Length: 295
Image 1 (cartoon, rainbow, N blue to C red):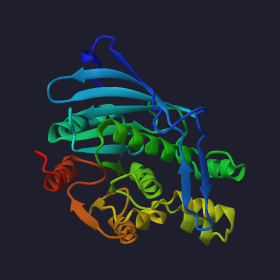
Image 2 (cartoon, one colour):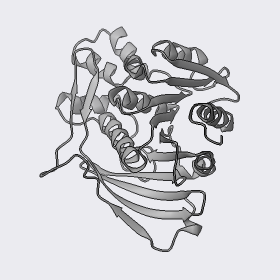
Image 3 (cartoon, rainbow, N blue to C red):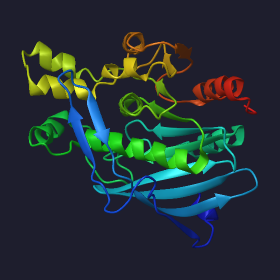
Image 4 (cartoon, one colour):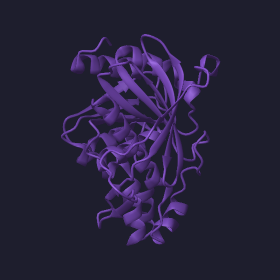
């Protein structure tokens, strides 16, 4: 992002040790009989590089050094933001495609963290969404990458909370909204959830239709966003979907929305699939009314 204006070689190192004493704890997870995931995520250390800075906002590349590999994130933030966003991109979305968006949110008074999630084809290693591979790891009591990604989002929330001391929302577009919903459901420290052009994966329904039971159904339930939406309440849920979405049908988005508890808001937007300027304007306007920012 904006490599032409990188502050020459300026690196910042930050050690995330909040709440830790002695030997660093290890991450762990469990999935109950209903398929509800719980995670305990070890703190990460971070390495930061300032890409751009002016009187309005700062853009930073932050590498989170987790126990299971490095995760690359990009942060755009004003000096004193009112709200922070952990943004989870859809399939193949790269930070460069969101640079103007991140600046727009920062100018409106919001910190925007783009998480280059594992296996999305960016700078963070991993494989694309693969429930079969993840289930094989689950059966061995190893970490499915899906759960690792949820932990990455939890750790990102903790980083922003420590840094700014403000509400932090989980937000995603398309596939990214699915990860964001799970993260918001398992981590009550998220202030709420914003889902854009999304639905359940449909994995749980598929394995049940095929007659499977037991661990496979439990695992399938654990990765579905609809499993967690009710547990986000009483924190707010906003779901955005276009009527003419060519990728995820509008009806599927409404079906997911119905699983959320109150308070919840469903908003139709223009164009087709994924986050766009219309969605950005609506989010900024909503939060301007709530937080009194300049949006």
